[in-house]
Length: 499
Image (cartoon, rainbow, N blue to C red; front, side, top):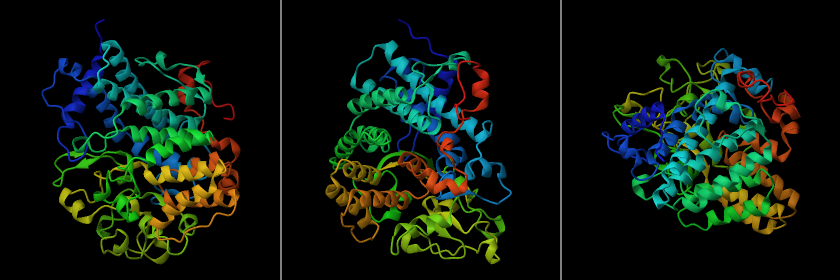
């Protein structure tokens, strides 16, 4: 049967191919002169590359909207920037006064649904071609990973959501009754099992950063962890940990430097690139949104200043924990070259007579001043990858699952592997309850301002205790569906019942 391809989709794919021509990381390798016929060669690669590009270029995955849902709602960070900048974000995301029709919610939902649709386009094309060669099956694994990844975000954020298994081309196609949470997870399980079986363990140096079966195993482990399927989560983590290409990368701060991108710690990163002279920009806004905010005259206008660490996070680190100076930039202090700084001293914050609006900043996106200068992007470090799944996450998931299965003596060893890399002494196993608390603490300081904390607190049942003073109540575990989505599908897509 002849495949009919939407013309807008074709133009989008050709644009992706044309703009991703040469790059030091995995981006597109296809020639600029590709034709529509070329798209049918080698499976569905062009459509899959569109998924990578979409994640890199949309705020629901790498911008302020993502930060609001994944970071601002925790006790680790707050909106940040100048108090007057983006004031409308404070109430819904810092103080849990959720708003149905705020831009951040609209964009987060739309971007995730669109990535699902791009994945579905790729899946449908492979089906229409009847291709079963190894390359196409690997491409299908990538597409199904992206669909699962997007649904994992959505089910954690909204609870029940519509499930789309086929491409949508009109507003009416989007009006689908919500599926239950178990039904959404069933699709995630199905997609990730396929990805595990069909993605390669490695693509080689030509495709650095491309999705692998290891990434699928790790995401699948996390999906099981969120449902307390401890044995399934542990088994998947152990498969990843048995692979020699993965491990804890030392020192900790190097994970977040340019040289640490796609290192052995990495299972999945959003790839970004800006050429040294700034002429080629295939970057993302992830680091730009969080760079130190100040006047140009101060020399410290390094970004938009959002997602700033809290006192609560700063005080959570044990003495001597190397992750603290690797995660936090302190206004009025040295950037600490021992832990990834460049020998510069930040101006003081406003409470101490200086120009900076916040006391702390996210050091994990702190860009090299020399590269800023060469690119001409002093306040826009778009070349920094967003780290999505790290090996230490797999290790701590394994520790948690093993402890819950009554294997705490094994779990404590994995916990101590992570602590050792941070320069901390080993813990001794006493009880399941104590190790559970130790793992909760370790996850917090290991993944500070990396978007894990809020969802961890919710799945542990700790959110009301920890975040209650900030305004959190039980219904805040799920955000209301954007009102415009509900209004566009009257009687079909129902608002979350508690909202």
